Image 1 (cartoon, one colour):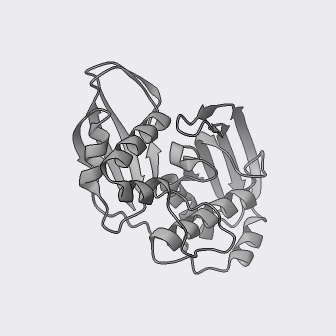
Image 2: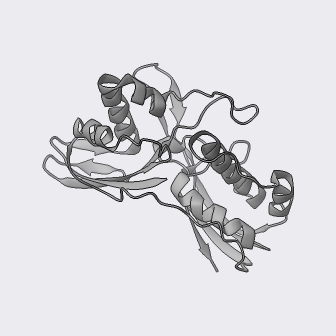
Length: 247
Protein backbone atom coordinates (compact mmCIF):
# COMPACT_ATOMS: atom_id res chain seq x y z
CA UNK A 1 0.00 0.00 0.00
CA UNK A 2 0.95 3.65 -0.33
CA UNK A 3 0.52 5.82 2.76
CA UNK A 4 0.21 9.32 1.29
CA UNK A 5 -0.12 12.65 3.07
CA UNK A 6 -1.50 15.65 1.24
CA UNK A 7 -0.53 19.07 2.58
CA UNK A 8 -2.93 21.74 1.37
CA UNK A 9 -4.14 25.30 1.83
CA UNK A 10 -7.84 26.10 1.82
CA UNK A 11 -9.11 28.46 -0.87
CA UNK A 12 -12.37 28.98 1.03
CA UNK A 13 -13.65 28.08 4.47
CA UNK A 14 -14.71 24.44 4.88
CA UNK A 15 -15.76 21.77 7.32
CA UNK A 16 -12.95 19.27 6.89
CA UNK A 17 -13.79 15.60 7.34
CA UNK A 18 -13.49 12.32 5.44
CA UNK A 19 -16.99 12.67 4.00
CA UNK A 20 -16.11 16.05 2.46
CA UNK A 21 -12.84 14.71 1.00
CA UNK A 22 -14.39 11.52 -0.34
CA UNK A 23 -17.24 13.39 -1.99
CA UNK A 24 -14.90 15.92 -3.55
CA UNK A 25 -12.55 13.22 -4.83
CA UNK A 26 -15.41 11.25 -6.36
CA UNK A 27 -16.90 14.28 -8.05
CA UNK A 28 -13.54 15.36 -9.52
CA UNK A 29 -12.53 11.89 -10.72
CA UNK A 30 -15.93 11.30 -12.29
CA UNK A 31 -15.42 14.46 -14.35
CA UNK A 32 -11.74 13.90 -15.19
CA UNK A 33 -11.46 10.18 -15.90
CA UNK A 34 -14.44 7.84 -15.67
CA UNK A 35 -12.27 4.71 -15.81
CA UNK A 36 -10.25 5.79 -12.77
CA UNK A 37 -13.46 6.83 -11.01
CA UNK A 38 -14.87 3.34 -11.57
CA UNK A 39 -11.66 1.75 -10.22
CA UNK A 40 -11.87 3.80 -7.03
CA UNK A 41 -15.59 4.20 -6.38
CA UNK A 42 -17.38 1.41 -8.24
CA UNK A 43 -14.94 -1.52 -8.34
CA UNK A 44 -16.35 -4.69 -9.85
CA UNK A 45 -15.67 -8.27 -8.85
CA UNK A 46 -14.35 -10.62 -11.50
CA UNK A 47 -14.52 -13.55 -9.13
CA UNK A 48 -12.87 -13.01 -5.77
CA UNK A 49 -13.75 -14.54 -2.40
CA UNK A 50 -16.89 -16.64 -2.27
CA UNK A 51 -20.01 -14.75 -1.26
CA UNK A 52 -18.48 -11.30 -1.52
CA UNK A 53 -21.01 -8.83 -2.89
CA UNK A 54 -19.36 -5.46 -2.36
CA UNK A 55 -15.77 -4.99 -3.46
CA UNK A 56 -13.94 -2.80 -0.91
CA UNK A 57 -12.77 0.56 -2.22
CA UNK A 58 -9.00 0.69 -2.64
CA UNK A 59 -8.42 3.58 -0.24
CA UNK A 60 -9.17 5.09 3.16
CA UNK A 61 -8.88 8.64 4.50
CA UNK A 62 -7.12 9.70 7.68
CA UNK A 63 -8.20 13.19 8.69
CA UNK A 64 -8.90 15.14 11.88
CA UNK A 65 -12.37 16.67 11.63
CA UNK A 66 -12.33 20.45 12.09
CA UNK A 67 -13.32 23.77 10.56
CA UNK A 68 -10.70 25.30 8.25
CA UNK A 69 -10.66 29.01 7.38
CA UNK A 70 -9.79 30.39 3.96
CA UNK A 71 -6.01 30.52 3.54
CA UNK A 72 -5.40 28.12 6.44
CA UNK A 73 -3.11 25.11 5.91
CA UNK A 74 -4.36 21.60 6.59
CA UNK A 75 -3.32 18.05 5.82
CA UNK A 76 -4.87 14.61 5.56
CA UNK A 77 -3.78 11.03 5.02
CA UNK A 78 -4.82 8.92 2.05
CA UNK A 79 -3.95 5.20 2.18
CA UNK A 80 -4.02 3.61 -1.26
CA UNK A 81 -4.24 -0.16 -1.78
CA UNK A 82 -4.57 -0.17 -5.60
CA UNK A 83 -0.84 0.01 -6.37
CA UNK A 84 -0.87 -1.13 -9.99
CA UNK A 85 -0.32 1.96 -12.13
CA UNK A 86 -1.34 4.17 -9.22
CA UNK A 87 -2.60 7.48 -10.71
CA UNK A 88 -0.73 9.86 -8.40
CA UNK A 89 -0.87 12.78 -10.83
CA UNK A 90 -4.60 12.43 -11.34
CA UNK A 91 -5.24 12.13 -7.59
CA UNK A 92 -3.30 15.32 -6.92
CA UNK A 93 -5.21 17.07 -9.70
CA UNK A 94 -8.52 15.84 -8.28
CA UNK A 95 -7.75 17.13 -4.80
CA UNK A 96 -6.73 20.46 -6.35
CA UNK A 97 -10.44 20.87 -7.08
CA UNK A 98 -10.99 21.07 -3.31
CA UNK A 99 -7.97 23.07 -2.17
CA UNK A 100 -4.49 24.15 -3.17
CA UNK A 101 -2.27 21.06 -2.82
CA UNK A 102 1.18 22.24 -1.75
CA UNK A 103 2.88 18.84 -1.45
CA UNK A 104 2.27 15.09 -1.40
CA UNK A 105 4.47 13.04 0.91
CA UNK A 106 5.13 9.33 1.29
CA UNK A 107 4.85 8.17 -2.32
CA UNK A 108 6.90 5.03 -1.68
CA UNK A 109 5.33 1.59 -1.48
CA UNK A 110 4.92 0.57 2.16
CA UNK A 111 5.43 -3.12 2.87
CA UNK A 112 4.39 -4.19 6.35
CA UNK A 113 6.11 -7.20 8.00
CA UNK A 114 4.14 -10.25 9.12
CA UNK A 115 6.62 -11.44 11.75
CA UNK A 116 4.68 -13.25 14.48
CA UNK A 117 7.61 -14.83 16.34
CA UNK A 118 7.58 -12.32 19.21
CA UNK A 119 5.86 -13.50 22.38
CA UNK A 120 3.07 -11.15 23.45
CA UNK A 121 0.57 -11.89 26.21
CA UNK A 122 -1.11 -8.50 26.70
CA UNK A 123 -2.16 -5.79 24.27
CA UNK A 124 -4.27 -2.65 24.18
CA UNK A 125 -6.30 -1.54 21.15
CA UNK A 126 -7.53 2.04 20.91
CA UNK A 127 -10.48 2.66 18.60
CA UNK A 128 -9.70 6.18 17.40
CA UNK A 129 -12.60 6.71 15.01
CA UNK A 130 -16.10 5.17 15.22
CA UNK A 131 -15.80 1.45 14.58
CA UNK A 132 -18.68 -0.78 13.54
CA UNK A 133 -18.18 -4.54 13.68
CA UNK A 134 -21.13 -6.22 12.04
CA UNK A 135 -23.17 -8.22 14.53
CA UNK A 136 -21.16 -7.10 17.59
CA UNK A 137 -21.65 -4.27 20.09
CA UNK A 138 -18.34 -4.99 21.86
CA UNK A 139 -14.89 -5.66 20.38
CA UNK A 140 -14.45 -9.22 21.62
CA UNK A 141 -11.10 -10.34 20.25
CA UNK A 142 -12.39 -13.21 18.14
CA UNK A 143 -14.77 -10.89 16.31
CA UNK A 144 -12.20 -8.09 15.95
CA UNK A 145 -9.54 -10.41 14.55
CA UNK A 146 -12.03 -12.08 12.22
CA UNK A 147 -13.04 -8.74 10.69
CA UNK A 148 -9.39 -7.68 10.30
CA UNK A 149 -8.37 -11.00 8.77
CA UNK A 150 -11.24 -10.99 6.29
CA UNK A 151 -10.60 -7.38 5.24
CA UNK A 152 -6.89 -7.95 4.68
CA UNK A 153 -7.54 -11.12 2.70
CA UNK A 154 -10.16 -9.39 0.54
CA UNK A 155 -7.91 -6.39 -0.15
CA UNK A 156 -5.11 -8.76 -1.17
CA UNK A 157 -7.49 -10.75 -3.36
CA UNK A 158 -8.53 -7.70 -5.38
CA UNK A 159 -5.50 -5.42 -5.18
CA UNK A 160 -2.52 -7.58 -4.21
CA UNK A 161 -1.06 -11.04 -4.56
CA UNK A 162 -4.18 -13.05 -3.73
CA UNK A 163 -6.04 -13.99 -0.50
CA UNK A 164 -4.11 -14.70 2.68
CA UNK A 165 -2.62 -18.18 2.66
CA UNK A 166 -3.59 -19.07 6.22
CA UNK A 167 -5.88 -21.51 7.97
CA UNK A 168 -8.83 -19.19 8.65
CA UNK A 169 -10.69 -21.63 10.88
CA UNK A 170 -7.83 -22.57 13.21
CA UNK A 171 -6.67 -18.97 13.60
CA UNK A 172 -10.25 -17.94 14.35
CA UNK A 173 -10.51 -20.63 17.01
CA UNK A 174 -7.27 -19.46 18.65
CA UNK A 175 -8.42 -15.84 18.49
CA UNK A 176 -11.67 -16.73 20.27
CA UNK A 177 -9.59 -17.89 23.27
CA UNK A 178 -8.07 -14.43 23.78
CA UNK A 179 -9.74 -12.78 26.80
CA UNK A 180 -10.87 -9.15 26.82
CA UNK A 181 -9.80 -7.84 30.25
CA UNK A 182 -10.85 -4.21 29.79
CA UNK A 183 -13.51 -2.54 27.68
CA UNK A 184 -14.13 1.19 27.96
CA UNK A 185 -16.05 2.24 24.86
CA UNK A 186 -18.68 4.80 24.01
CA UNK A 187 -21.12 4.58 21.12
CA UNK A 188 -21.31 7.46 18.65
CA UNK A 189 -24.38 8.14 16.50
CA UNK A 190 -23.62 9.75 13.15
CA UNK A 191 -24.75 9.44 9.53
CA UNK A 192 -24.38 10.95 6.08
CA UNK A 193 -26.82 11.36 3.21
CA UNK A 194 -25.55 10.83 -0.34
CA UNK A 195 -26.33 13.84 -2.52
CA UNK A 196 -26.23 11.66 -5.62
CA UNK A 197 -28.44 8.74 -4.48
CA UNK A 198 -30.22 10.10 -1.41
CA UNK A 199 -29.18 7.02 0.57
CA UNK A 200 -28.32 7.27 4.26
CA UNK A 201 -25.10 5.70 5.51
CA UNK A 202 -24.16 5.18 9.14
CA UNK A 203 -20.93 6.86 10.19
CA UNK A 204 -21.39 5.87 13.81
CA UNK A 205 -19.89 3.12 15.90
CA UNK A 206 -17.89 2.84 19.11
CA UNK A 207 -14.70 4.58 20.18
CA UNK A 208 -12.54 3.88 23.21
CA UNK A 209 -10.12 1.28 24.53
CA UNK A 210 -10.04 -2.49 24.93
CA UNK A 211 -7.32 -4.65 26.44
CA UNK A 212 -6.70 -8.30 25.74
CA UNK A 213 -4.77 -11.13 27.35
CA UNK A 214 -3.60 -14.48 25.98
CA UNK A 215 -1.25 -15.89 23.37
CA UNK A 216 -1.33 -12.81 21.13
CA UNK A 217 1.96 -13.11 19.23
CA UNK A 218 0.58 -14.34 15.91
CA UNK A 219 -2.18 -11.72 15.89
CA UNK A 220 -0.11 -8.58 16.53
CA UNK A 221 0.95 -8.10 12.87
CA UNK A 222 -2.73 -8.10 11.84
CA UNK A 223 -3.57 -5.49 14.47
CA UNK A 224 -0.68 -3.33 13.30
CA UNK A 225 -1.68 -3.58 9.64
CA UNK A 226 -5.28 -2.72 10.54
CA UNK A 227 -3.99 0.66 11.68
CA UNK A 228 -3.46 1.40 7.98
CA UNK A 229 -6.42 -0.42 6.42
CA UNK A 230 -9.08 0.18 9.06
CA UNK A 231 -11.49 -2.48 10.26
CA UNK A 232 -15.25 -2.93 10.13
CA UNK A 233 -17.83 -1.10 8.06
CA UNK A 234 -17.47 2.17 6.10
CA UNK A 235 -13.68 2.34 6.42
CA UNK A 236 -13.55 4.42 3.24
CA UNK A 237 -14.95 7.33 5.29
CA UNK A 238 -12.26 6.95 7.92
CA UNK A 239 -14.17 4.68 10.28
CA UNK A 240 -12.41 1.81 12.04
CA UNK A 241 -9.03 3.46 12.64
CA UNK A 242 -7.25 1.61 15.44
CA UNK A 243 -3.88 1.62 17.18
CA UNK A 244 -2.37 -1.41 18.91
CA UNK A 245 0.10 -1.31 21.83
CA UNK A 246 1.74 -4.30 23.47
CA UNK A 247 1.78 -4.23 27.28
